[in-house]
Amino acid sequence: MASWRRWLPVPRSLLGRMLLLTLLVVLLAQALSSFIWVSQLRASQMEGLLTSARSLAQSMAASVSYFRSLPIGYRPLVLDQLRNMGGTRFFVSLNDKPLQMQVLPPTPRKRAVLEAVEATLRERLGSGLDISLQFVSPEDLRIFNSGLKLDELPRSWAHYALSLEPLNPPVLVTQIRIAEGEWLYLASLLPEPYVGLEQQGLPAQQLWFIILTSSFLLLFIGILVHWQSRPLKRLARAAREMSLGSEVEPLAEAGGSEVVEVSRAFNAMRERIGRYLNERSQLFSAISHDLRTPITRLRLRVELLDDEVLQAKFGRDLDELEMLVKGALQCVKDTDIHENIEPVDLNHLLHGVVEPYLGNGRVTLAGSALAPYPGKPLALKRCIGNLVDNALKYGERAHLQIEDDGQAFVLHVDDEGPGVPEQRLEQVFEPHFRLAGQQQGYGLGLGIARNIAHSHGGELSLRNLREGGLRVTLSLPR
Image 1 (tube, one colour):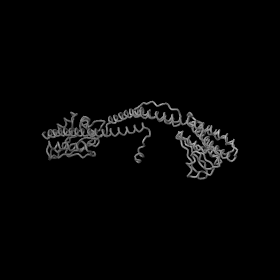
Image 2 (cartoon, rainbow, N blue to C red):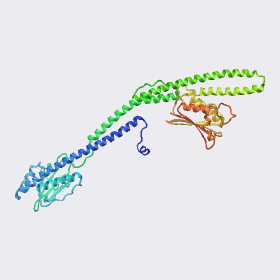
Image 3 (cartoon, one colour):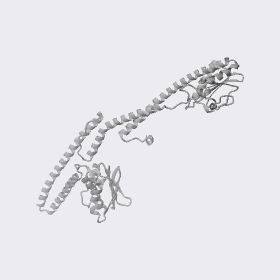
Image 4 (cartoon, rainbow, N blue to C red):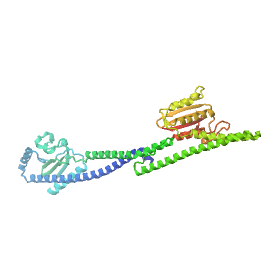
């Protein structure tokens, strides 16, 4: 399968694939029908050619019989009358020997004509007939014993019977011995439409018919597929916008029955996801609010304790509980999906993030974005800000490098720290996980950054650099 894909690139779009498949089917069907049609046409042409050749041979046999019946002295007189009269079917002459001429290369049709003419002549004139049959080009044709060419004769003698300008077809030369030292010379053309004697390819009319029918069929198939694929494009656009957190209107249930069913399922899924997100936000807000109140009351009661050791233990437990609540609130806030999608000037955003650090040389920025990116500006700023903060916190310096093209916007953030153990590269994205326990923070920065990247259809990955330090790569598809 991979081999034919290498020789025949398959389009990625539904329209391109349908057009390619239709074109292949049309070409195959037209090739098969044209082959059958041409085979039948050639068979009928061959049958007509042989019929015409036998009819011509019967006329030759009649002429031979006529000249045989004439007294020897009258034969030259009759030939003179035929030449002066012109317009006869054959050019006839009497020679004392068969003329030698350059014969045209044999073809299946030439052989079939020569065999049919010879068989008819021998049937009419006798099987012991001395006969010479050959096809000769008009330029190589010789007429009399002296070897005169066709162009050297008066036009009234032979041109009417042996030339058909501008086709210049081959001439059938028949030489029959009618007496000792006397050969009757008959030169003629085959009747229309068999003068060419060559198998022709597909006629121009058939080629134009194939081209026109294929073009119209591809045009109509293209219009049909484009019309049917518009609901799928709307579905893809709505799914992409919903994955970014935008408010998506219900899809119009239009198109074929299968597309209508998919649109209906997508609308139902959109409603369920919307309800789930709203309920999740409300539930989390309620839980956070309800937890803050008892924590505050407990702090007040701890202050009233007389035992300082017990008071310190309760204080540490309350601090840990408050840190968990604040971390959860920050996680919900920083990954909030209700921000509107708008074109974001990534160059301006990046300069805003690194500007506070440019004076001390701890942050460098190389490259630039080629075009605005449709996304959530505050979420992207939080994402990139978290990456820069992490690099400065654990690696002292942050080196930002931008790679942008028509496919994706890629941002590399390199630091000069110790890196991350290979077995922990995925674990650092988990909430509240920190490699250095003494560092301040909730351990949510990288997890929040990856969630924001995922909400934009992108990805966040980590890689230890060979020369030391950690590279964090943010990739956002365009």
